[in-house]
Length: 348
Ligand SMILES: NC(=O)C1=CN([C@@H]2O[C@H](COP(=O)(O)OP(=O)(O)OC[C@H]3O[C@@H](n4cnc5c(N)ncnc54)[C@H](OP(=O)(O)O)[C@@H]3O)[C@@H](O)[C@H]2O)C=CC1
Ligand SMILES: O=C(CO)COP(=O)(O)O
Ligand SMILES: [Zn+2]
Image 1 (cartoon, protein in one colour):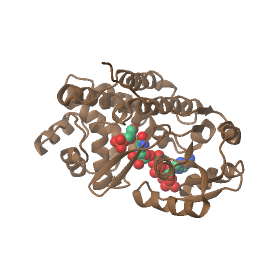
Image 2 (tube, protein in one colour):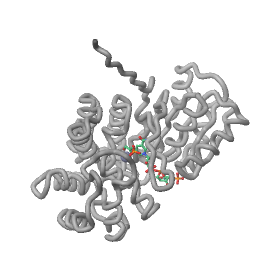
Image 3 (cartoon, protein in one colour):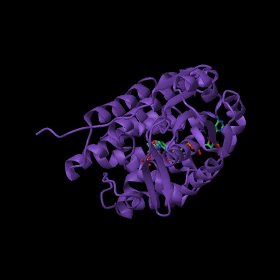
Image 4 (tube, helix red, strand yellow):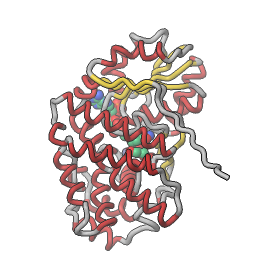
């Protein structure tokens, strides 16, 4: 008997382009949302765009969070108890969006995603990435009801946020390789559609690398489209697997070992050079990944991330402990092997 089934939840409206922030009110009307809105944001995005968002909302309340953590989610839930919001509006980078996503899930309301930086592919995904102690959870939540990604706003953000978003997409190459490996060796459930979409997204972005330049709003357009597409791949898969493999484990470990030194996207990009080498060796594709990163000004070395060689090696040798996700790192690699791969790829 055929017993397979799937339930894919995707945003209803995706508004992407020049000046679309002004259409936030119309996008909300189209969703027939009721009740008070609660804006969940972080300091810089609130300063930059909070008033423009609130001006389009009826009787909004605001919660400003500093990071993506379970305690930040609790802070939002506490504010929500007084406000009884009908929906949340997530405004900012990956951290406030992840916090709002999880808080919305806890509160049983929908949320709308308004990214202020094209820095990560959680803009559309149905998962929150939340650290806790020695581990990192990819928490199931719902994707946004709508996404309003204004390329004018995204293009005004510091250039490195956009290059971080590019690197988060380029890392899809190794994430999918890890996912396929896990299917072969651990019989992990794999989605051909999600894997293909994730890889194609990285390929299209790399093919457009010449048009990704500072000061060009078109760059934000190209990157934001890729971030949406990668988030959709995660929604189809029902996990972050299409966009998060061993390179993400290395980055999550760096967040613990060397916090706040580099952006998420930049860390996963460097992680991808290393894990591609582990997958396919000296003659494999690691140079293509490194060159793609370099072509959009993303870091390709530990020094470029602002971390020292020892921190990189510690992250690489302990990344497998972060979560139970089978990757090329399997049960861990030795310090000697870590130094070998990092040296061979010029990462250290
Ligand atoms: N759920 C998912 O599927 C995914 C989740 N993620 C998660 O997202 C996070 C990374 O996202 P990222 O955006 O890099 O992190 P942040 O949200 O911390 O943003 C990075 C920095 O950019 C600032 N910022 C945001 N917008 C602007 C702007 N327009 N102009 C100037 N500064 C701005 C932020 O300010 P401030 O400090 O005030 O916030 C912050 O200092 C990680 O926690 C990662 O795990 C990443 C990919 C996918
Ligand atoms: O960053 C992500 C995809 O780009 C998701 O991260 P995790 O699932 O590893 O937390
Ligand atoms: Zn990522």
